[in-house]
Amino acid sequence: MPNPTTYNGRGSVLAAYVASAYVAVAQLTRFEPAGSKQTFVDQTSVTTPGVFTVPKAVQVDSGDFELEGVCNPHDSMELNLLSWHASLDLVAWQATLTDGSVYSFSAYVSECVPFQVRINKCLRFSAKLRIAGGMQSPAGVFDPAVFSQAVFATGSV
Image (cartoon, rainbow, N blue to C red; front, side, top):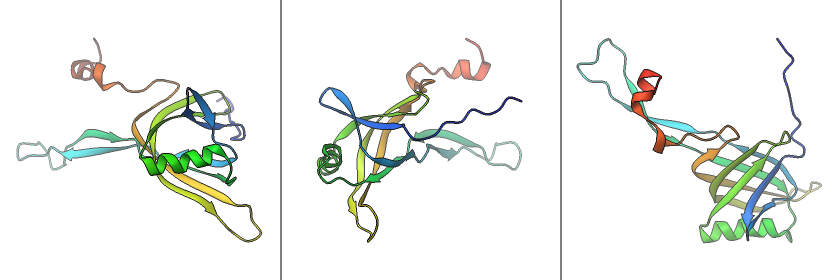
């Protein structure tokens, strides 16, 4: 088995689309998606064979995206976070990892903490983004518009 490939997080960038270009959020020390989660309905009935429930996946929630960093009260992107939060704006985002992989998504700034003060520590800020729709990964994203139940059931076109 070959050795695993690993990458350091330093150099990864989270950027928001501002006035026709993606602009990086400066001095981030951590950013990460919380992960997506499926919603299921129970389709078990009295005619279901066996004693087990039969769940059916019906919806995917893309979840949240958390970020935190070193606070600079005069940084335009930190001020934009506050503005987008207050105005309920849906913003386009890109996370570029150190290997060059790009993840794109649209999100609202659902929580914003403009500063955190701890004596003898640097000022910090944090925010949480609520992802709307799916996240476009380097491998592509699932497109429900082209999904065919027949192909899924048979495994062929």
